[in-house]
Image (cartoon, rainbow, N blue to C red):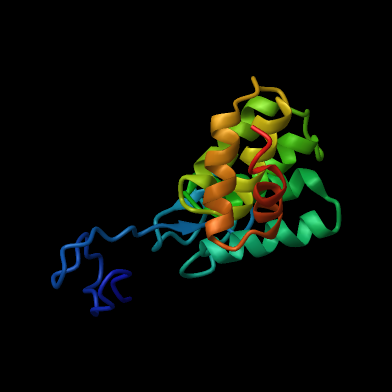
Length: 175
């Protein structure tokens, strides 16, 4: 195993990289239920499923979520997006926001959509920043706030988000 920060070789069961001091997150995810487990566990402590070695990365969690989302199996998509979001993955946070915003397979909840969009937006996720601009512009489940509208649209536009740039171009003299 290698350090995620400096790529140095890590000793077995290391808690910190000896080269740069970065803490090592030594966790694997159950392929069946998504629960966190010790990477050396043979069976999931949550559901009892056999563990497949190193467990699943955030990217694999997202692949599962996206597959279920594309097939409109929103309950399973939500489950896997939530697992990724709880690990701090911006794309998972954004997609949870979308699901709450639209009520895809779950009860629509604008406050939870706002929460997850903000988590992703604070990590620089342009789509979440743009969606926050839309929510604040429309007063969609939250009070309208023109300052926040422009704040989030500007952040998204600086990253090349075409919808945000279009909004700014069309509204620069409106407010």
